[in-house]
Length: 304
Image (cartoon, rainbow, N blue to C red; front, side):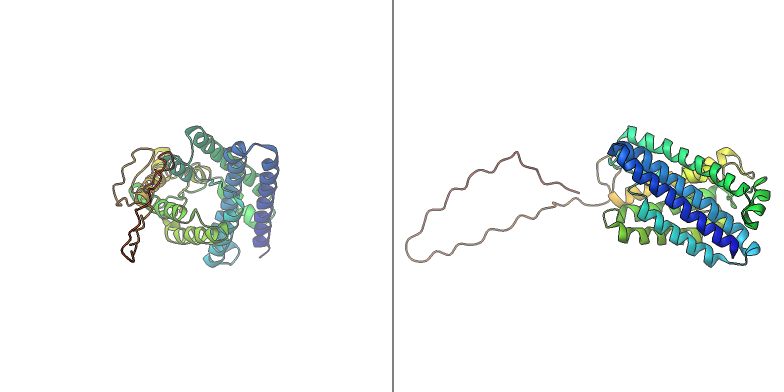
């Protein structure tokens, strides 16, 4: 269990380092620069470094450390619980950033900046994690260094099936993001962590269950077994297609492309109250009071 304890210490160190970076950056940079650059960079670094160390435990742990998938999936759930609580609005996922752009929640320049920073953070995390493994602090790391010389692809199925698996995972993940994005992070983080764990349990044997183009690029694109176009189809095209379907199913349209709602009927958001009947007693009837004309400059009713 010594190797597992070292890995847990590594997780804590990475999260602490990235959290300190986020807090310092929030004080130094303007809000827009912080959200588009510093927060995404630190969160992408944190996600990739933890994923690589966890992937190493999943591959070597069962026969090198004597612990099974229950430990790995428990760690996965806890890590995404921490990610959800510490990311501070960052997604660390190009598919989610594209979803925000298509939903008119993020401008074009900010989206491009996020995509570039996400790939930069993932690549930097991969380089640092491999440097950390080279220290061979545990037997796990020594074995990992031997295996890293000829790493195997995470794609253990056909390309078409891999695209379907990654697209399906991305669909459910993005639906969860859209559905629970407005609730408190205290409640949203466990839901997203549980969703990721369930998807990983189902899809990991086929594609590794990345549904994150930048994370897949940093973890498995350099491994032998498949060509670059095949990797791009499975790990870039698949998650993007799943995200598009999720956004369309959730909203009924894709605002950046077309505004017409094709799935759901549009109803008025505000209900007009019915006027109350005025009882008149006696023979005398009072003339109705004239109402002042309402201004048309106020906000009009919106339909969703």
